[in-house]
Image (cartoon, rainbow, N blue to C red; front, side, top):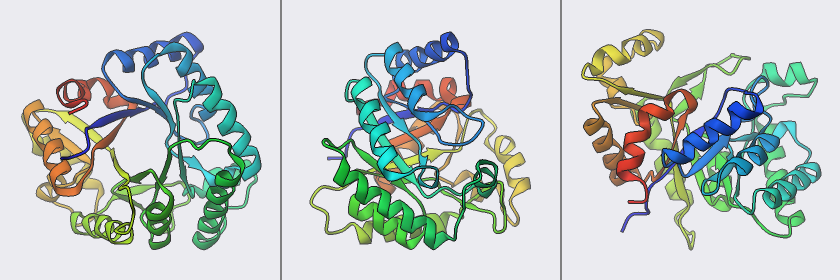
Length: 285
């Protein structure tokens, strides 16, 4: 029997206190299971934003999506995690990644490091959090590389996939969708690495676009124009794009659970309302 669906929304826009609380309450009203905050300069600071979200809501879990481990000292992060989990009534879910935007590290005066160095730091962070925290919060790890997939297979309660990869040489964190075959191969490799787990991890997918429309081709055309050699047909097959009528989108979400095992979907803030009917239809099922 498949794991029931959970749905999250990632709030990326800073807001004054009243507006922030209002949109958190709206997410709860719409049935979202998790309110999430990323870890990018120019976006809300994750931990105070989640504490404020807890004060405005009762039911949703609260998560980082995901913290840039390179911004954090493990011992200080453990303090933030323990305090935030306490102040949110135990609703915290901790998402961690290596970070991928060099320009943010430059702006913060922090070293960016090689891919190997960033994964090394993330691994140390995960291990130190396990040692320092008295009680463990659910851990999400996300990434596409071999070592990241291995870390997720070993440590993560939630394994997260973006279905996108960094444009080579980009310091601004520009991403492009992965080809469908490449995405499937990365997911298959994760499952191979995680085959020996006693309890399978929950699989999370970040949805990059939700478009409720009768004209699917027109909706994805602007995206296709930005991706070399992409076709409309290929774009419409990507798991990270939910495009079509509500019935088509709902069917796609169900099919992706059957095909890939994704039961925890996250949409970005601009798509919260558009995706809400699917949340209402499939939440908890």
